[in-house]
Image (tube, rainbow, N blue to C red; front, side):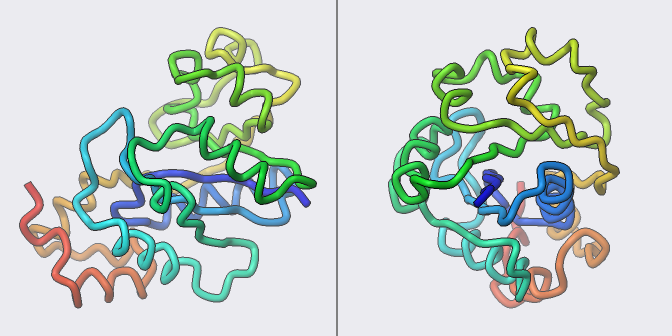
Length: 199
């Protein structure tokens, strides 16, 4: 089985994340994508919503879509979430499956600066999904980003241009956000009063 891995704070999960997952399924012929909310991301401040709330929003977002699944592997582990550790754990859980790390080009172009990039390359192929505003990578740009062109799939697809921080601000300002969020997630945020005091 070919399993994609899409990590993120998912604070909140939005339609851009789901579009990236579905684009990767098409481009890399994946059987399933695991959505993995980060415990504590190494490169950014802590999430606003709790780990449990972010997990629940992911579950609500995928609904009955059998090609998507939510994993709490990073949240259960606790501490800072490093990709290599997550991939090693997933290799133990899925020893006979191929793993594909799904990244937007904005993250992928910094891959060489990550912790143990050579170990990540050994554990998984990389699917680079183009993101609005970050351009489309040429195959020649992959080596300078630390990616192996032979193990990288470029997925040039149009996905919605949604920023998590702009989305949280919009929710705090009580602006309509139904065009950016799955309906069940929008409902959950309203019920729990999330992001209302977003700074």
